[in-house]
Picture 1 (cartoon, rainbow, N blue to C red):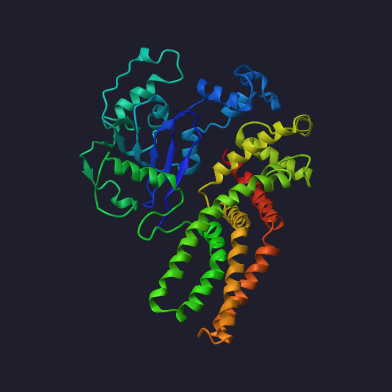
Picture 2 (picture 1 turned 90 degrees about the vertical axis):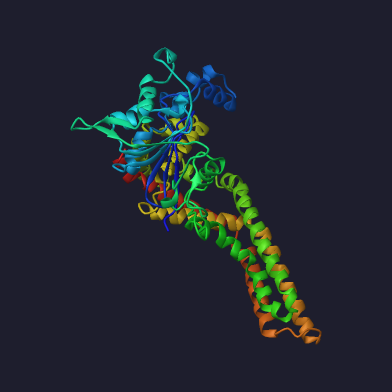
Length: 458
């Protein structure tokens, strides 16, 4: 079964999301082709940096002659450009207009009317909102987008090359409407129909959007990253106690066999959450000890092992993000500011390669490797504890068997002891910050390599 992949676009205020459904259909939720930051965002960003809005607009970061405001506005994503880069030619099977506010529909005119992106179904909400041209005044929104919305909610599309009007199906969600809206998309289990607009239906969409790259359906299959980076470390943590349970439980009364297994299941759930949080919590400290995030360090002039290769990478990334990266002199003058620019550029590369596993398999593989080792390091205290506990219990079982107190198979107890001893050595000697660093740099290198192909499509 195919996975569901959600693409959350940075459009500033408002929203725009593309969702690749398991059925291979494309769904789009809202649109906002924001060219600038609203005042509330400027104030919030300025406050976060401890500067005034005036400084934010013109006296902040001056690398490459740009202010902080220009820097953040350069990170905004054009929904149509993103569509062209990732889904060119694909029809939007289902467009959802969550509500009729302009920061959720700015860009409709260009996307569906001027560029004529094919549309199959338009989901609308009942409302009585009305706007006229005077309502727009000198604000950031375009009256044409409102007019386009009015046409789309009537099922009318733009004229084609032959002069005929395009059309699409309109679904206006009401609480009592029913239909097989998600039946063919592989979203969830249960009844073949669900009330459109019902809170449960909306919650189902939110749940699907909240877990990108996870296949939702019978069995709730996990995506490859979760298996390799999160569950594999958890399995290694609980391997000694699981070995203990499965080896020594047969010697217990039948009604007691469930308790160790239930306990092990509880440990898996607990350790999974603690490991994920622990790995994330360790990450800033790891990066500080390494002199910064490897992806940032890979773009620094002062850390460059090959200045010629670095210049090439800067040139290709500049073509992707739309502005030059700091020169060596600018970096020396403001190292922290230069790092901010590098981090912003890396964020663009990550966004442009996310969800494209087939095109960039090495990035995905190294990201899994880094996640695995980082989470192993986060789980290290639990790994040491459980391995030592299982080993001690195995020794106690062997002692009880030799003393004739319990009829426990010595061979199985010995297996548990060996597994626990090996796990203890691994958790103490192998799983260290130095073990994580090489794969972190490998991920950074693979990500920068992607700039070669991404620049050709920018």
